[in-house]
View (cartoon, rainbow, N blue to C red):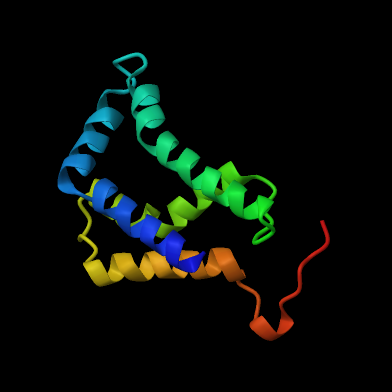
Length: 129
């Protein structure tokens, strides 16, 4: 799973962190209040579609007994944000651009945390639901 999620993060990073995507995101954000439906359409065909693809993968992993997440869609949104939210926000706000190593580290850390949590490995137990 780690390899699949990391590859997904890299592929999404190529798209959402590219200058044309950042420019489009800025434009949609600036015009969404003025143009009814613009923001929803952008979301549906951009982030919403990516989240649905990742959620389907996570749902399949749940059904296979590999992971156990109560809401695959919510988990996909959170994982995406953990992977690329920081680098994307920096680009959207003209803060110093992250380098490739930084993007890779963000993806790797998000995948590691998603798959293994943040508790010390020796103390890791599955909490009761």
